[in-house]
Length: 191
Length: 201
Image (cartoon, rainbow over all chains, first blue to last red; front, top):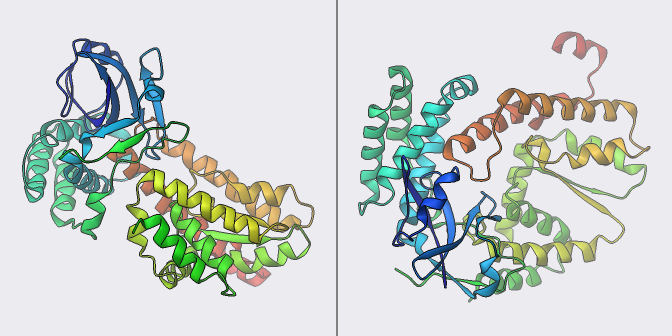
């Protein structure tokens, strides 16, 4: 039995956990509203997904699949998120800044389209083995392909283009996980 | 050296400093990701009104600068705290909180994170409303602030999902920026004279 910290990749109903071979019962996850780029902890045993935990922005974990809290039986979580961490932080920062060019009303009105756009961006870019500087280009391509109005596309793209990360160290920020109450450590040695 | 040990050594070095408590409070603000918010050291006595009057007149920029300056005087870079893994941050927070507790056994510390973030709990409002030594004018101000915060969150209709997408975070940031321009700065807390009220409102 092994626990992994990684990201979800969801393309319509196809779900995948980056860095993990799909467990045979992966279909079970389609009933949950998971999003591409969402960090999760998966506990896998013999090609079977035993339990799945989602994380909030403060690092609190919540089990959404599995009968027992398997993390109590383990002493290590393998951190596979490190492979895509810089890309994840970079894309997320770019998107947060870009979306801020929209008014509250606009983002409310176009909520579904914007959510779909974000999902597609993470789905199509996060797993790629590319240099960080190429992310901007690919995000812009996804925005251009979206159903948004031209005016919105122009503003989003303008913000993506002009955005600069103020401190490169921020890209190394690991996924927060609050493991208080568990006697489990995170193994970050996987490269 | 482990970053936790390193910070603890730095804290020990400043232990005898007259503003040690203030340094710890600034550090706590960073650890809870509210480094630009006001904090108050109340004594549960009449003088709390005066303390509140003094502090609330300051903009959140003042506290942002103060907290940053205090952190730097401890020789800690804000980015170090920002990228610190959650478990280490929680551990450090526990240490800092216990040090604050040791220094403030008869005082009440309130970190007014609601002033810059309406998604937080309004602890200061609860304290002001439930204590008789605050005057009615103060209670009115904080009730209005609390009411405005609730209205704003209702208006934004930001769905609370466990995983926060970039879109959700961005929308929340927008609301926070808007809120800071209303209740983060000092205008709404100042006592206006009748003439000022006529001009300003």
